[in-house]
Length: 226
Image (cartoon, rainbow, N blue to C red; front, side, top):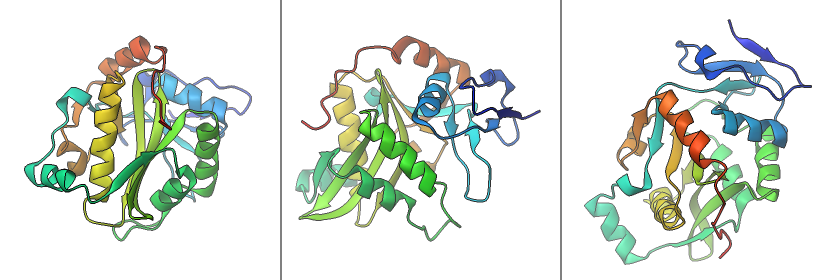
């Protein structure tokens, strides 16, 4: 039975109570306060819902992750990277990135990055937890992604691209920088062929939570604006 969260409590049910179908649905309700979102990621779940739904919280099993050491860059993308067509920055335009990620897609009806979701992650950005990657062509924002950094873990949320390979270049640049900072895992949440092409793979939820317990409280050594 699905657990309904109370606004006066930040606790979540054990991840073992997540449904098998749909895979990983753990709870519903609550709110999108910064405190609840932080508690959710620390617990091993994340919000994902449409405008006409209550807030839904997920912890899929298996969990799709990317280990920075396992990043795969295709020959064609490596060639584009060497050409240096774009400039990549971090935390220079978070609001613009999340708005672009929320824009309508040709292959999807609506967006899960609702206006309340945008406001919630903007607050996490103000607190130094949520971060953005921007990809520029001259002075035009043509791609990017955003997510959360907690300890030595990065929780990816969404990406967008308005030019060939723009989001791919942003993602590869992020992964290489996270590796240099000593991050051990990038949470990709759900499987996609796009992420698998970079080396993302599924791990058991129990293994994922083990990484949470061991690395989420490690010192943050990242210098995002540098």
